[in-house]
Length: 78
Image (cartoon, helix red, strand yellow):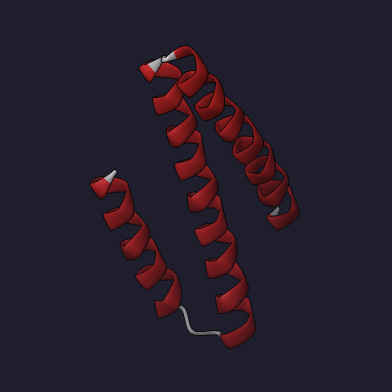
């Protein structure tokens, strides 16, 4: 499951950067915003993978909740 999340995160990052670059070249706010949205999805996937890995290694389940709370604040900010 973690490998699949990593693969989709990499694909989202690639497409997100391409959308941002294309949006800036064509002066398209919609493409640029969609690219930033995909990059936020990539960041979210990274946090999920980090949380799963840290909990698996340490057994400290509170870390997953703390990461989720931090991610929620980033999403609200964006």
